Amino acid sequence: MPGIVIVDLDPNGRAAKAGLRQHDCIYKYNDTVLMDTSGLIAATQTGRTENILTVIRRKEVLQISVSAGSMGVTVQPFPIPDIHIEGVGEVIKSFANQDEQKIIAQVQAEQEAYLDTLANIQVTTAPSLEGYRVTQTIGIITSEHVEGINILVDFFAEIRDITGGRSRTLQSVLRHARQKCIAELRMEAHSIGANAVIGVDLDYSEISGGGKNMLFLVASGTAVFIEKNQ
Image (cartoon, rainbow, N blue to C red):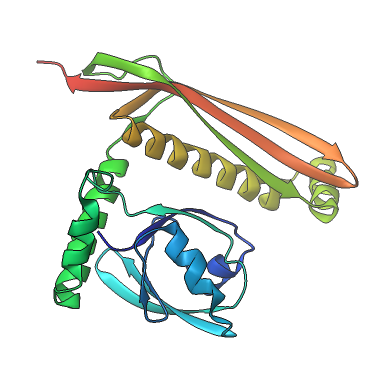
């Protein structure tokens, strides 16, 4: 299936600033239909100062302008089960003879199904889920996220702590890190055939050095396949 999906992006990168989001499917870079990550790398070497991305976001097809340079994204081929089967090259060639609107509709359907599957993967810190039984334990999965915390944020956080207030900026950083890790746990679980993650542990730490402070979050859990109790 044409298109590459964004699995992660730098919040300060060109892609994020242009309005791209996690799970967006980049269908075209200028006039080039993207089939794999190397295709994106090659397409970015055009030398244009501004580039137009055709982006599929569920039912929407967006035209997003991005300036030249590193986009600050992590991508992978569009997630369909048979993307790596023998003969996939012939499958890809067949798309060249199809109407583009039909291809986009197929990508949208795949994306919708993928996102709905991720949303239905249950994630909990508890060792079990009420009303469900574990039928298969697949394995331990982890997710890591590092977030920069600048001195100004630390300074205002300290003032608020002294006055008994709350640091909304730091709360936002912590929330963003947690959401990213949980989203990555869902993607990892999906990739190995699990439909739930139990016993999730969130371990926060701070790393300081060179005048910089970094928040480091590691999330780990057990990927399992669950079924509803009869």
